[in-house]
Image 1 (cartoon, rainbow, N blue to C red):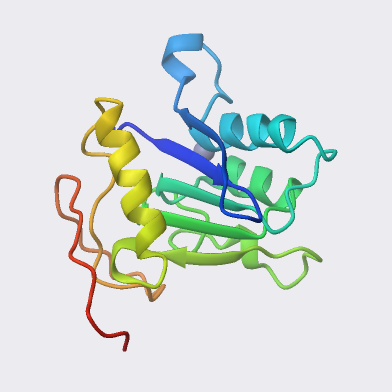
Image 2: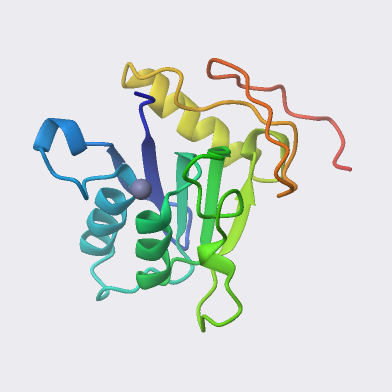
Length: 165
Ligand SMILES: [Zn+2]
């Protein structure tokens, strides 16, 4: 089982919550890292249930349940490290969060280690390594959602580029 870790950053970039998948540990089918982190973030933010302008950062592309939870919490941005073509609902198998029929559609960025969200990806990567979880965050060849998802093992922290493209 690939360990999944998620954090939620507030509008000011402050880390509101962090969670790992507790489905097995708790015997709870809904205890995915994203759901736990979003719930804890709402409590921490203390401003009702909405997480507008907050960012969900997660190692793997969220599943349908977690994509739905992200929409329901009105999270502003979703950033994830690796594509999950078998269950992913943020551009791989489905694209739940950007369905045009929804009134709230979070901005999505996949392949964080190669994109402008690099800093967030690195932060998450370091947190996960610190927690003794490895293999949860994989480098991806780019931020474009295109269905061509190569994977590499391990948690790779890239050097920061000297120039932005
Ligand atoms: Zn999930």
